[in-house]
Image (cartoon, rainbow, N blue to C red; front, side):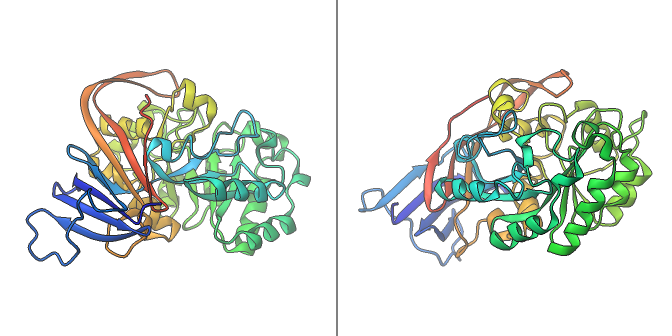
Length: 382
């Protein structure tokens, strides 16, 4: 690892141009053009030994992107992928695995995270078998509270919450019971829940009634009949009540969980935008409709959100929920977690999970990412 890295002439989200120096994995200085009061070091020259200077002219820099919902355990099929394929190679500095592993395999996920360049965090699936099967909550015997609590004690830096997938294909005849058990495990561990919503039963109102402050509803923009909006596009009273209690909303695009129609209704009524995430895994990365977190972010630019709002939903918004604000900002002394990206003015075809295709004129494209003190160039994809 180089001792010094300089991102030169990068545009901050407020429009200012800055040189950002990273030394030993920490932000050592932010020199803003025309800022005579800046006290940081002068930007080194590329000729200095041990210094890498990256020309960022024409690109933005933000806190490192955080994808709050991915599946990064490649052994599981279909919901698995390699950590760095959906992380730093796509401009994402930190990924949060959304319940791929339960207590049986969480040690293996932790070990793979130690070998990756991407920062890895995780929600622990309340089912001990995790996504070894896609109906992991259909048998209540697969939920072992003692093993889950032991896993949380072993991995306090990795596990940020508990994951329960509460839709018909997952719970089978168990109904709402797995979520009630998840609520008990949340109390026992002190960790919030991320709850996947989808087809009924259980009814969405029953799911929402179990959620508390800091819990996350993922797939909140899905277009299935059991979604959070009525036929006219108005938010359900149960959703408004949950938001008032402090429940958070996460996109979790995925193969079957993002609808332009529902997203437009949510924007009309001021619902969200808390965190944008991809629910990416090998299949929807390679064949769509997800492709990358950047592609999902581009869809929200198309919907009319500002660039600042879109980026906040994958930086400061996500970092605040994680309790790690340093991951989403650019300040002297913070660990260097940064993403360099462009907003290209070019036509792009966007498709949602229902096959609805839209034509946009702007596209977000990651150029590079700083993670763990290293600058990694991205592989540009759809």
